[in-house]
Amino acid sequence: MATQESGQQQPGTNRGRRAVLGAAVLGAGAAAIGLPGVARAEARHGHGHGGGGYKSLPKPTVVAHRGASGYRPEHTLGAYQLALDMGAHVIEQDVVPTKDGRLVCRHENDITATTDVAAHPEFASRKTTKSVDGASLTGWFTEDFTLAELKTLRAKERIPGTRRNNTLYDGRWAVPTLEEVFRWAEKEGRKRGREIWLHIETKHPTYFRKLGLGLEEPLAKLLRRYGRHTKNSPNFLQSFEPSSIQRLAKLVSAPRVVLLSGAKTRPWDFVEAGDPRTVADLITPKGLRWMAGYAQGIGPTLDLVIPRTSDGALGAPTTLVEDAHAARLILHPYTMRNENTFLPVDFRKGTDPSAYGDAFGAFKAYFETGIDGIFSDNCDTALLAAADFVND
Image (cartoon, rainbow, N blue to C red; front, side, top):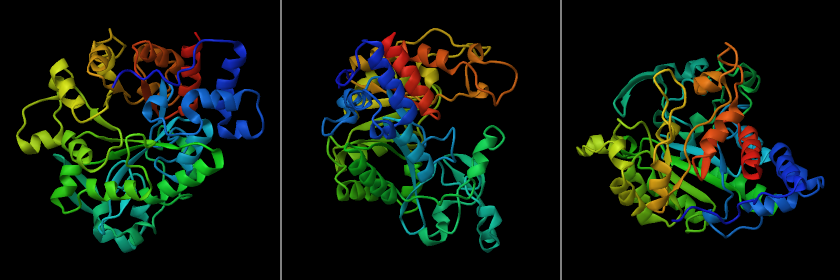
């Protein structure tokens, strides 16, 4: 696919910029209270009535990484709702299965850090050590719980040392199923008069298929049930394992994205299959053309777009954006966060790793490479940065 241009706001008047900023800060609620220009800004940015597919999304597209996870415990309906209210263009879900094959939204099947499972004595015996994609993990895992059992748990902040304020919301929300998210998106779409875009990732698909809990088939079934299976459906399907995306391509027509980790790493399905290729091979023109045969985009780690120097500062951009666009792939790299600890050293402020650094400066550097969108834990910041960039 060519680089998406449809729906991009062109540099214009201050009034137009104020409208975009208002939408970014207040979300759809701003349109409801009649903030001048907000409804028009949303329509310009692909937030009007849908059907146009991913080319109708704005550029840069802001993807709320696990919801508004900078402000609420990740992968909760609270995090998704806040991201939508802030104006995020797309909201991400990671999906893993329960013991009875239901798809739930967790970043990992290890739920030790993201739920209160350790406080439930009835599940103490479920604590175990497993090898997941070559990593040894000790804790509690979704595949050892039925959905009914999982629903007795409550979500909590994953990194409380960095995001202390988020712990206020510990215990407020349950672990959502993907079907609950689809229903929520339908309800919000009717309320707002537009499609609600999602970015759905299959986690550890080879691992789960070996357990008899394949992800792609139940995901495709849900997508068809909720009319999210066509090429113009308002969701991306993504995975770090190319074979998962290839499998989904045979089941549904929804747009697909291959996620890419560090250049020296190998997708786990490659490891299992004895495929010697690394991510470095996949981001060559040849590798990009291969992925373009079954996907519409890639989701590279930001370091593949602009590597960091030995001291942790931003270096010179690679040719990945240009090469991917030449292969007709869009790019939604991950993940921008506001805190110093996650930023390149040249955009940090002060010595507190949990304090916010110059996130706007970092966003600008990434946007200048020509990426089509970006994942961010702080979608309000990302939206303001995108508005600055578009109107600069």
